[in-house]
Length: 100
Length: 495
Image 1 (cartoon, helix red, strand yellow):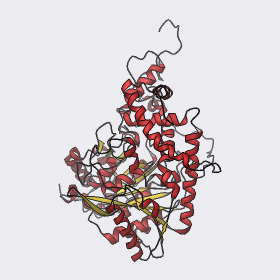
Image 2 (cartoon, rainbow over the protein chains, first blue to last red):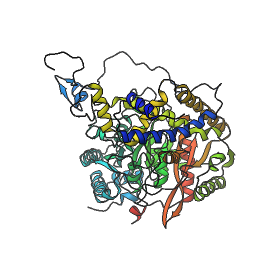
Image 3 (cartoon, chains in turn brown, red):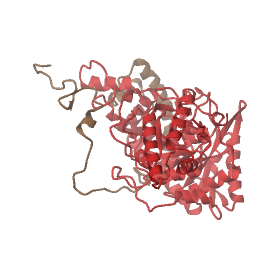
Image 4 (cartoon, rainbow over the protein chains, first blue to last red):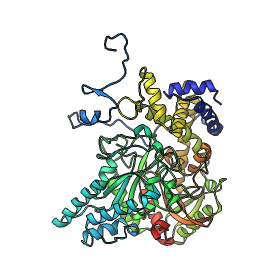
């Protein structure tokens, strides 16, 4: 399989990456070269093989329903690029307000 | 200040120095920090040096010595941590611009356990950005260098973790291994480097790359030190649901005994015969197998045919999980935020584009594509099935053998800039990746040298064990270490 330029731009949108035209061109070449190798996996006959998501058996883990110390409000906000009133501040996402 | 010659000492020796009051932990910390200040300008293993944390830890140890308390197992041992592990009082940058100013908000469990075991935290170590790389070169802060030849790569992604130990700045360090990121730099720098079984060590507080593959493990200059660190950091952690409680195992005793009599050793023939393995690497691995046989092991051969497809499966699963894990870096709660966004979509897209480096973008794109509608079954589904086959092959091999041998890396350390094509770089991890896919354990231990351009460069032997069979792996590695008795002091240590 190989990616066209418009597919690269579509994947970049899905990945939320604003790529430059140069990056799109260079990634198109890189990805197609890597996919060329990855496609060798299609040679394996895996029709009857179950998939593995985790290397070791994973089971649900529960704990007693008691309050334990967690991340404090201050710690959660300490790396915020912008904050206001103890919350993360982001650009307005719902239009029309007077204070926009 | 007396020269404690820390660069030549093992963790046990340093602890003894402190316990016997030959040196105070404070003197050890001062000596270690002085060495970092003297040579890290050349090696660039550290992203951040933390003398205040080292001195505070040292003073605690010295108070215990003064009080006559029993000292913890790694008391006074200079240590440092890959910069994807959180530690209060330090930044955790993952060597990425997107986290340039990120302050740790809590402690990584493995780091906290090692500090509880008495180590002196010297700082945070350089790495490939978000652990995406096999040479250290994708670090946004400039690559760490190989102490055997500063013009060559130390391997990656735990580049600084390897270089700090090989240059004698830290006695032990922690790295993380998703496809070889501990073992491969271990091989390229002549250090002992362990990827424990998946679940053996908690991943809590280590910034996730591929959650089903990542595992934290130690770098050291001796097998026994590696075992000592594993004893300190392993075990169930309520904060990581995939961590596993196992009965206490005596890894240090296994390393000390180094008993391989009757051990069944399998050379992975088809992997050893792959294209691209340099003759000196191949010869050293076969020579190590012969030494194990001479020490009483039985040596046979095995093939792992699906492992040849490990690289393809890994470059689907790894990037797929990474693209999902790295979705959290969106400029909202932490990390770089683009200026003057027009709306939230613009904020996400430009914050990520400005913050991530080239290789991170490549992996995110690859993973997003592999998971996208219409391609999921062909890529991710197929890779997960290949993963089953690889694990099944290992399980069958471990019915016949206790440990398996391969080279850790097909070649010794190469020069900066030599592998500019991404796929060529990916092939550097051909021997280490299958173990992450299967989830079992493996160590890289020095087994010889190759000479390139008149420079002596270390070769690593990979010893692979079954799930939770670290004790056997340590025994075999320690036997090789003791038998070969190689002088593994890099030029920066030997002078």
